[in-house]
Length: 402
Image (cartoon, rainbow, N blue to C red; front, side, top):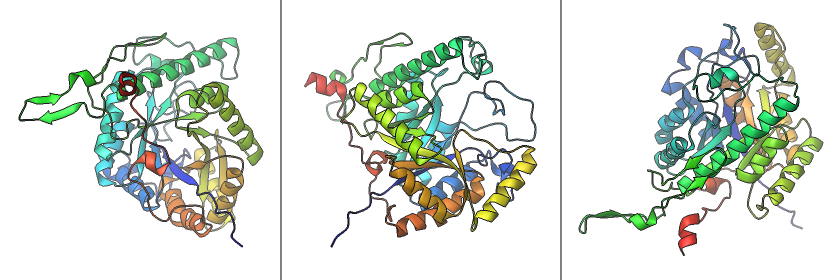
């Protein structure tokens, strides 16, 4: 009697400096002196590829990291400073072969034209493994770096003014992604002729103005970069509440969500699926990944002791928007399977200490999931869309012409 095959899970890691715990840089495995070197990021991402993970995301921002949600701080005992996530991904791309590379892009103060060609270039450099994580920012100090708009300080606890700003910035992010997607399509796949004998390099009739006119952007197009190898690199976003849930449903290929238990995971997935149907995308594949911060060790006691030690170094208990898991790889695998039953199609794990917990994911969790027939034993596709079961989309402009 045959049993129903188990659905494989998708697995990614979110890389942020030396790790997600603010005292992670003080751990022996953290390598803080190497943090701003290409070798450091290459080592992390090749380790993730060794574990057959679908992709990595790379955190970024437009201001120094802060212990406060909407303002800078004066702390000197935590990592401050970043390398540009898109450039890190481009540097590592030629040194990897299979893993997807998804840098964070802050839509609030950057131009969609610039980002469209940067991610298209990353897709070329990586051979079809690029994506982006679109992010918004509500910080007044970050707006001051650009001088094009002011953002008033809002009450983190909410209120009408805060709600209006949140809605506006997520509506802007949706338009931002729409512009980026149209620019990726502004060259048809066969627009480049490259015929030296006739002297024709490009068919100008297959380059298209996108003529986007909206509340936030007015973009003529076309792009200066030919259509990326994937056609459309992946668009992803982190979502905690209704506004970003709508952004995910309208524009994303993957949404990262932060449930605290299986019941909440199911409720969030149901909500996003309803928004997806409302957006007219019910027939499209939209992945919903659960985010967890992970402390992985050989025993739950060892993981808890390490977390306590890091909390003592930080001077306060670590908290996160995502659930914090402390335990063994087998216990984490149990949790992932439980949450997957609620409709999550994958997970994005945040290593508390990158040098310790990333190998815990690749060398302990992955083999455990493989034993349970819940994770691949080899890469089965050459592009990121292929790894996630996403077809290469038709070009909207060539389809319109046809």
